[in-house]
Length: 265
Image 1 (cartoon, one colour):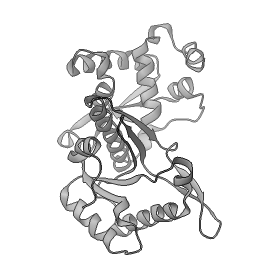
Image 2 (cartoon, rainbow, N blue to C red):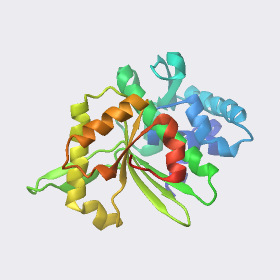
Image 3 (cartoon, rainbow, N blue to C red):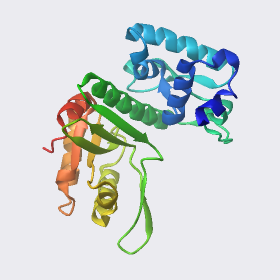
Image 4 (cartoon, rainbow, N blue to C red):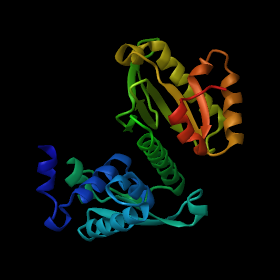
């Protein structure tokens, strides 16, 4: 019923399942490149090249009706730092898709923050692609703020844990649960340690275990092996942390981790 209501607000020229899917993805991830959107919708097409062509066609139509906008940004770490097309909902697009009337100002975002959001989207894309390639497996990914957790601290204060993503990979044989932090090697190690301590506090509260029966592995996705080693040393420096709950992997190890499970080393 909700989807039918939203469709009544779309121009007839945009009322296509692929267009609805793209609007929903941008509402979920906020920002995504053309290729990321095509990879997320590739199952509907015969090949990735076809998915890219059709995605661009539908995005152009949505842009024509002021439902999405395109940013041309040079973002470090993306296609060698070259300029990429990044898509997001306009104020009208977000209102049509979610009912929100908040004004969208995508061009006011810093390049660094935008790169972080794109890295979160890329992590989700890789998890989705890996789960699709597995037999009898599926992935459920929750983005911010749906993946956040509110709980009571040791002194009874209201606290909120803010992971970048929450993912559950399900098969007939197992369910793997993850809180995911996407790290671009821009945070001071002290802030990483503070984040791990917040996870430890949430773990100690028992709230997640009571609600879900299990506490997810905290997966730190980092850009390279040197950063992974640095995070391991930082986590090991605080012996109060449940070190086995934290696993660092590089971007290139996402698929392997989803297929085989996270291994603390």
